[in-house]
Length: 264
Image (cartoon, rainbow, N blue to C red; front, side, top):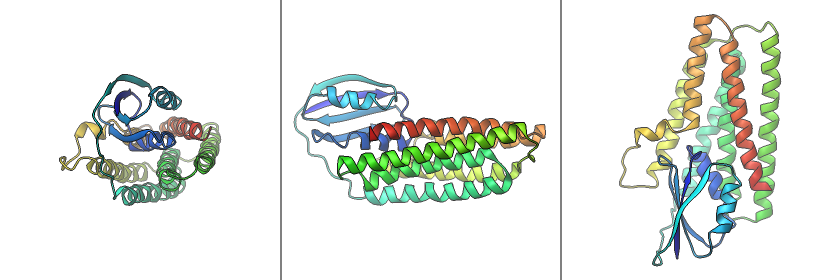
């Protein structure tokens, strides 16, 4: 058996971990994947050459760099029997906040909340693909990934068009208090997801490292919407909301492109 360690500089979110898992699902030679999100490292235990696995990782454009490969004695790995239940839990949390943020975003006229809701939906897609596609046929996995990726891009493009309409129009200023309150709850929800996912991998850790929370794009986006809400109130303008909305839509499209690379 061999052990290869990779540095993945852009792996800062559990949904990206699941993207990697889905992408590597076709390699039967992989016996175990050990993710270290805070330090952005992935350890792969495998029985064949690493070059094909490395190319598959690089395809995701997550800043993959192999640090080394070494021969080790065979190891028996315990299966995580609660993995499916865990994925259902984080999927449900993300999808619930997609609905909450989309609804409150439309009511409060906040593109920041609408965009963040699509980011939550993007994470839901990743967890959903993990549940329904991993272990299934390659064709099924690619089909689901393509549908999710293109649908995500479609929603983001519609969001961009709406941002442009509001930027050049005379749209009312969004409700800053709704932006802040909902984003705080979304921030808590993301923290819970991170905690559940990380705790499941290390029974020795009863708590989540603080550094892990602030390495997540999802959490940074939540903070960005909160700041935009404060600026909306301070400047009495909808421009901060439109700016954060545009940034998040770009991140959503980047995530969709990564999903589509699984399907190609």
